[in-house]
Image 1: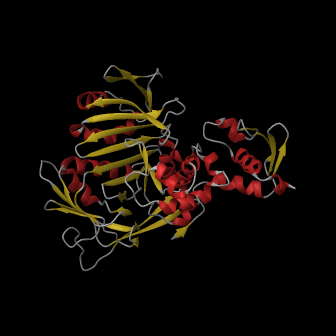
Image 2: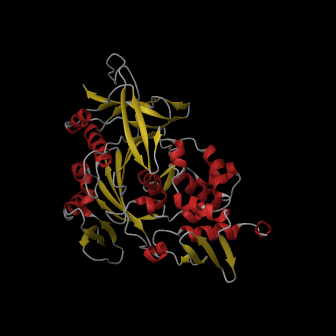
Image 3: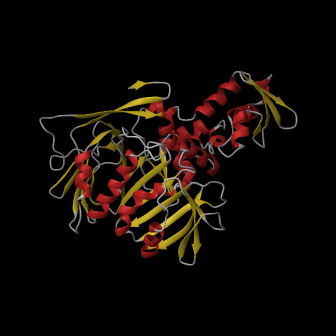
Length: 447
């Protein structure tokens, strides 16, 4: 693993290329975590997909997002989707190069043998993409996730290697989108014909911003906010949904109930599976800098609680908070904060349809994943260095190289340029976080 200041280089090693031939789709895997332990080429599933055409289209859509830079497009970005097998479904996930679009295909009701549970990357190469685009008809498709003599062709034991950069901003966004989505609600649901009509009515412009406003059993497009409306910022970013419309059974739209953000998620129900697309608040603005979860992460107990809760995760289809509370001996609020911590490290995702978390382990360098919150790291360094001086009236002063910052702790206001630029819309600045960390320190430790 070669590392730089802002990115790591991830090395993928596949036993062979993924192939699709003779009704058999073999997805080659590269490194990951399973119930049986770390695996070089984990093997998770072998069985039938009874709805071959929508499965091929959905997998291709996930791969398209992984290859795309929606903001300032440029070629050269290649990433492989992440797949998690939980025993009941396969979850294929990807994240765009610009850090603003997240995609997931949940293939439910597996008909075959679950060989293990866990998370890995799968190879989606150019020839496989061409083969997926040609899948049609009603014939079932045999799927193998992991090396198998019947589904993966290896020529003379050849190993397929890929080395790709993983910018910290991209990796952080991949992790944090799950935490942000946990605060969203179902805002609208359309049946298949209404869903198709609405999606086809959207403007094609990549930068166009519109609102989806409920109108009876339908949605209408508005160019301005309206009560109950959900923002679609950068309407062109939903283009990946269009090839799925011929299979669409329903469309569900999710967003923050209080209108606190223009981010949203769009879920298309397909035969035997669901495709979910989450969009950041602006086309130029990725999920990595939202910072809405940093207060939870800054508590004294969060890191330790996350270690305890993390050991109890078992690649479950749905993480039950009450069960985790019973097993860990922690109250529910601390379990939720622990899941926030685990979410920002990529160890749990969030399924809007099930309104619950699921366990997965991002198959990337663990040291890189552990450093996904530089703002919080900087805040803790300030608090530990003695840079924070608590004042009366719930205020503090934080001394930095840029000067002394005056902080109102409860309000989260600060005199730094970050606060003046964002005023809390992207979470607290490092000075506010440092003051809150310091304020939680026992009084005797401040003497």
